[in-house]
Image (cartoon, rainbow, N blue to C red; front, side, top):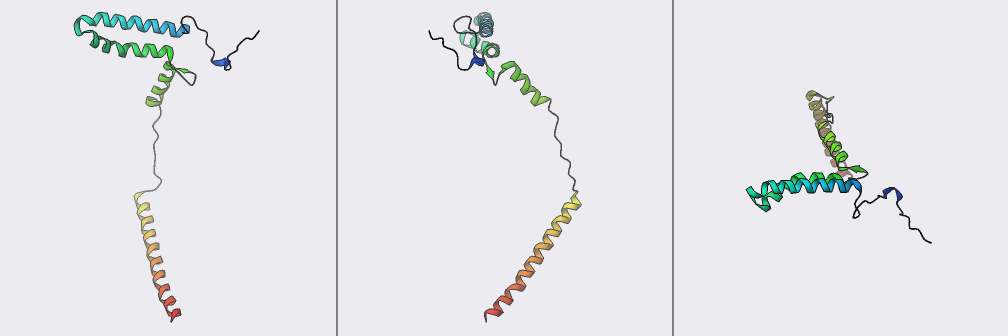
Length: 133
């Protein structure tokens, strides 16, 4: 007698109807009810295609809540986390420890150093030419 056990026992989900879990079944029923209600309410005024387009933005988040998981989080938890990251994160500020005068002085020092290096290179060239003669 062989009993098959799912290799990843933590991800095992008990199915209720047609391979859906209880949560998925409830959310799919709610989304179908809302979608049908919106289509029936708007069909007379805008036609079938437009009423379906009106229903989709209402039905999609409801259906996603039942089916979508990412790294163990439900869609609702993930959405709340993203909104907190967007709106509740403190702003990061940068305060420079150098003033404009310090930066200008540093640039002047670099320029002076560069000029001295150029002068040293000019003086070294004639000595090398003298040795060749």
